[in-house]
Length: 243
Ligand code: PXP
Image (cartoon, rainbow, N blue to C red; front, side, top):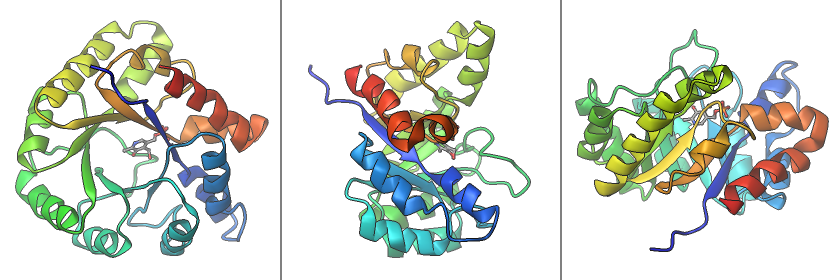
């Protein structure tokens, strides 16, 4: 079976983080989104956090006007966020766990433990025509629970694998991702991956056939400080599209 080309979603939250450092107007996340698209991004991802620490509500409205590919909205499965998402109608939404005190998203969603709460949000989002993805650790019970909650897709949390990659001892974590991807695909779920990925650690992950989309933020924006957004997006887009 020939598989479609893998996709790169560029997370632009950290452009907004820089702007919010001065509560000013620059840098404009929508400008970053436009350059990312011109440089090979297949989609733009933003996380509207409950504390609005980076992306603001106005950014969603501006992005809606500017983005010509797909918008993926990361969000907590709360009533407020579900209402905003249903009004905003992104192409897809990714349900993520959210704690106010965390620096970034820590670990995957416990769909198994909170399935009843998830079912409601998933149903409302799907009714609004939004593809729903669950950001989960590569654990089979969480994959199964995501399917039972009605999700269309899972995004495998690659953070633990990325930490292991730095030590060189990453095979066990890679095997978990491989197993979760195969299991999810067999269960009829689309499979995405993200968190902590960069131009080096993504290479072994690109060999997993079921993973069709990668959402990458921090490493791209970090390299963009030196290479520009166009250069930083292009180098990882070339890797993803060449896989
Ligand atoms: N996917 C999800 C669900 C996330 O929460 C994040 C972080 O916002 C990412 C991908 C991107 O992670 P990173 O910024 O480490 O590339």
